[in-house]
Image (cartoon, rainbow, N blue to C red):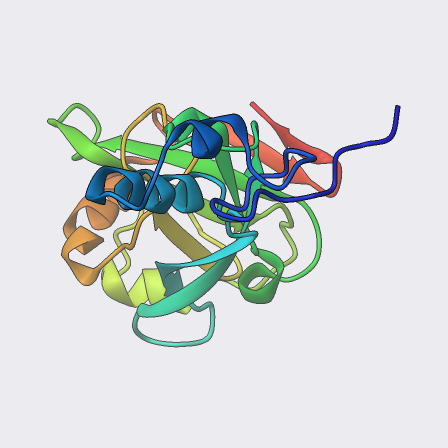
Length: 200
């Protein structure tokens, strides 16, 4: 049996005939029909393969953090869905952290035992102890960081703890990040990211 290739002439759904069953059942172009067609076009619109999200970069050789645009590759778990679980954002870390494997540390509280934050942050670093000491963190923390961070650091924000998407980060998130720098590595969650994928 050959695959269906012909789209419906009204709604554009691939159905193999000139009119799909729902369009054939409807007569005329009532407002309800037009609304239905608009919904169909929205539901079957191609989903984006790349999205841009704002992150905070802590450059190793600069004095201050700055906002950057991160290209995220979108992986779709099923063809059409608005559910957060249906899409996974894979941030392009190489542009900011260099080649190699990366760690992603979860920041879900304000400080070591503080209030849970509604939109958790993830701090990405390159796994490489030979990178230079991060001067940006040293200056921001006035030498009081609990860990000697090395290389560039990138912070991104998720809409909630269970989401695999990211939303825009802003400098308003800086106090929470500073609180994390004060106590890490006492308690943390980490994932390792390599060319083959992510692991906890």
